[in-house]
Image 1 (cartoon, rainbow, N blue to C red):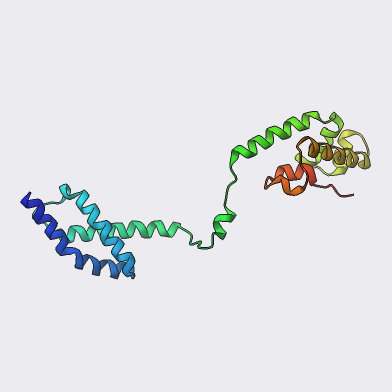
Image 2 (cartoon, rainbow, N blue to C red):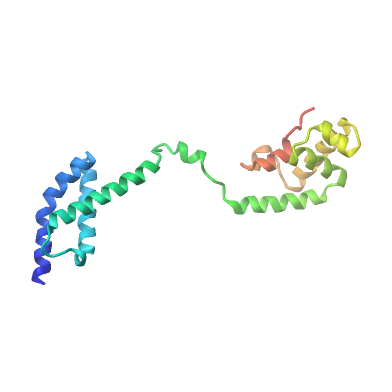
Length: 183
């Protein structure tokens, strides 16, 4: 117990030196205090690994320096974003809602007449032009536009959409219901 107390006394004696070293590394008193506290806690947790007869101060300096370098490497990968603008751009929508929306969309699509479903899928899902869809379906562009318009209206009814705002952020649902809905 006396040897352990002596080690703790050595740790306490090293604190001012650790603090000065941490300030010189970090350039910030607050960050330096955090580094010293972390080094002391890690030192206490690993006191059994300290080699008696060696310098406690040097050992704690090594712990502090390693902690500082680890934090510096981590901070290089981090993007400062105090306003949350970057995080907002990379936000990912939860999958469960999209999966349920997809299931609902498939059910609604299956209720459409075949000619409307075919026209809508060719243009909205496959990205074909009205002209290309008309050729595939063996009809004219006006008929394709009419079928797509009716299909979108029916889907909106089946899915209980009152306005475009009800669709949320799902681009595929918006595309199926509103893309190319002009003349």
